[in-house]
Length: 73
Image: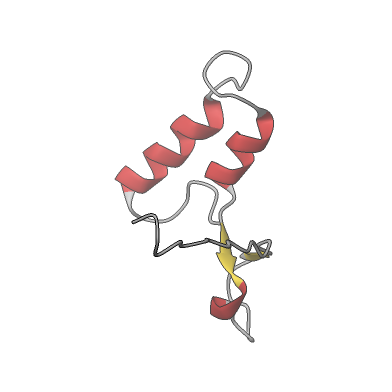
């Protein structure tokens, strides 16, 4: 969010280290590097008055159906 200018040197160093990593060698993809350096928040935590440019993540809805057979257990 602050691109390495947060006033917390340990957080800035971590961000700069991630930014400098080559996705071809150290990460699985460029998309993973983007997820680490440009985090998103869930839609329920989105701010109305955006002070920082934080994007929101849209999560897919997944359903799970389980079947329990009382005769077998």
